Every structure is written in C-alpha cells, then in structure tokens.
Image (cartoon, rainbow, N blue to C red; front, side, top):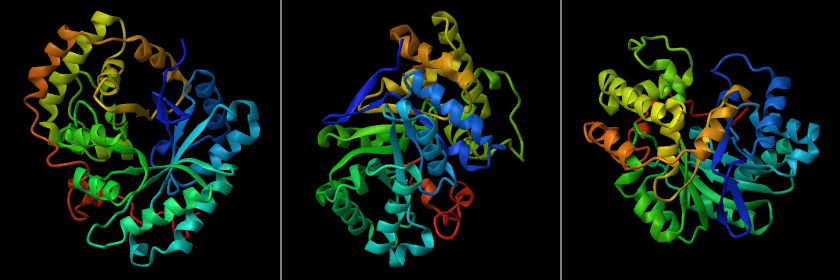
Length: 346
C-alpha cells in the first residue's frame, strides 16, 4: 500500500503524510547527513513524496538538495514545501531585494528552478508589511520562481485579510492535534469558504503523543530536545499531565482495538478533520515507516470518537486562535522561539 495524495492546486498533489524535516536542523541530537539522505530515499520509495522544510531550518534545504543530486530518479517524484521567514530584526527593511535573496537561496540549495510551495511567516504583527511582502512573493510566483504560495502560523483574521488582498493561497500550515484545537475557532470555516487547505504540524506533539509516554511520570527540565520543550507547554495548556495521560490511555484502547499504534490513531484523527490536506510527521528514521501503512489503512468509527469526545471536552486550551499565544515574545511559548535564523547563519 502506498500513501494517498491530495490535490492542493490543479495539477499539484502532495502526500497526505508529509515528512517533516525540522529535527534535521539541530536541537534534536546529532545528524548523520549520509544516513539522513538514505532515509529520505526510503521515505520517497514508501510514498511520502512530500518533504516540509524552511529557509531558516539550518542546513536542511541543502541536505534535501544533496538527496536530489544523489537520487535523481526519486527526486523526480518529490515535492518540497519550504518557507520564507524574514528575520524578526529585518521586518522593518523587508524589501524586494531581501525576499528575492531568500527565494534565490532556496532555489540554489534545493537545486531546482522553481519552488513547489513557499509558506510565508511574519514574526511581529506590530510591524506592518506582511501583505506587501506576500505581494512580492506573488510577483516571484508570476515570474516562475515559485509555483504555489501558502502561509504558516497566521490566525483566522490575518488569513482573511491576506486572502482579501488577492494573495493566491493554496494552503496554510498550522499546529493541529488532539491537544491543540485552535484551528476549530474559525480558521477551518474560513478555509472551507475560500478553498484553502490545512497542512498540520504537531500531530504527535513531538513524539509525546506515543506509546512511549503512556504511564510515564511528568518530565522535568531539561527536556530531551526542542520538540519536547515546545509540546510540553501545549500539554500544560491542554489540561495538564493527568488529563494527557487519560488521553493516552483512551488512544491506546482504540489502537489495541484496531491493531495499530497509539500515534497512528492520533494522526488519523487529524487527517480526518475537515479541510486538512496533510499531516506533517517528524519521522526521525525509517523505523517509523510501518506506521505510515497503519495510518493509511486505519478508519476511526463512532465508537472510537465516543471514547475521545468526553476527554476532549475537558481540555482547557491552548487559548485563542492559531499561533496567538506564541506571538507573545516574552510569554512561555514565545521565549523558546529562535527569531533571527536567516541572516548570517548559513
């Protein structure tokens, strides 16, 4: 069985499970680049033909470029979703030359003539200019450097403003999981109305939504990696470690009933949500490949949803719309961000 695909735009399809590459950018242990390239080949062969990366994921675009050179036949099957994330300190001077430089650098690193999908993020909403920046990216799209445009980490009101400005979006990448229901606050309805699809990260909360953590005591600082640091905060907002453990036990009961893994159930739940095109999976090695087939075959039924519903009704957060709490630079979520990863770091 291969991985199914979804149409993001006419004549453009992405795999419903996307290989996320954030863990290859550091903060998750040492990276064996040769092994990472071999793993990429295995994932494409298994049907995960879409990779998610970013201009500011240090070294990742170049690593995918290396994969493309070493495996040209597999590279022809590949779609790469990257990002354009102007540095926080450059937002006051985010002009055409700066943005064109970011896009040209991504093209060079990836070894392509056109970027499949560029997902745009803007750190500081107090600084105007995000619509104008997207207008520049739209110009680069018309010039042929970019095939499709999307957003990452914009809330409903901002997404509507950008669409109303005539920016041709095909997707928006947001955090969405059993732990984080913020897209339900209005973004999904807007995307249904305007024909924009969701690409979802945080599906497994950096590996915390897994069998490994079932029955485990609440971890304390320092946590194992950047993903655990990020998603432990989400668990606290969700309702705390005890409610999280209740959710894990419910997921385990469903998984046992279907003969799959706990994380497979959590991923299938996200894929089945309205307007969700794909789930971005931070698979760190090919040992996760069997799970892709389980997720593909799994179908959740009314009994499964009835077990989850009362637990999800007790969640207390995260509060607000998509990425609102993360935008507080001095808050719990904002303090862990790295805001200036483009300039002088590559």
